[in-house]
Amino acid sequence: MATRQWLDNAFWHDDSKLVAEAILVITDDEGREISQVVTVRKHDLAGEINSDWTELLEQVGEEQIDASTAERRERKAREKEEEDQKRKAESDARDLEQLFDKPYGETAPTEDQWRAFYAEGVHFIDPTQEKQGLKAYLEAQEGLVKRCDDVMLKPAAVAIEGDVAFVEWTLGLKIRGIEFVYPGVSRLHFDGQGLIDDHRDYFDFVGPTFGPVPLLGPFVRWMYKRFVS
Image (cartoon, rainbow, N blue to C red; front, side, top):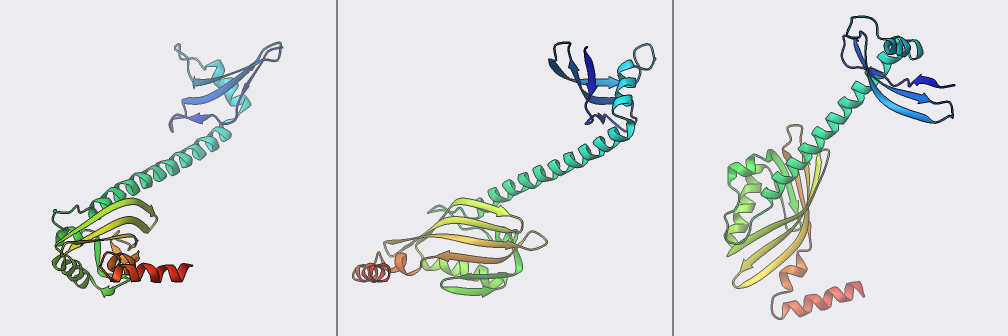
């Protein structure tokens, strides 16, 4: 004997509760099942109560449909929030890439560009220096540019998780005809306003700095081998 069974995950289209979306499973005389999604309206074209509507409420019940509808709305809200966060992270990653992108021959970011990303009380540290406050950080960046014939910064991977971001980059410095190349990573922490309040750079300073220099380079490479052999 053929049977009709409405699944208990039906939900209302809106708060009027005049239209529901439900899955109907029909089992034929040979036990084969056919599932179909059905839009069930309370009234038919003649204004009478729809027989599918009556059957749905008898099998599933209005309270269960209410519960399924609430659960679905909560799930959709979570999915939207997660999607919004993903899009924001992607947008923030693109913005960070631009901040960490300076080819040779192009100008460095302006003070306004730095201020759009950094908090006034930002703490900065790398293997060569430690600075407190945005003014000191900007002076350090300006000093680096002035000491070099040219500066290059090229971003690679960018990862953002909550209030922390990691940016992988390559820094190039041209000084008196010699190019110094430093692969590194920045760890950035964002405050409640989304501004960077802690910036830490991790890179090998000694090897790339003294490796290209005649006489010093071979000694540095020999010293490195002594430490790792």
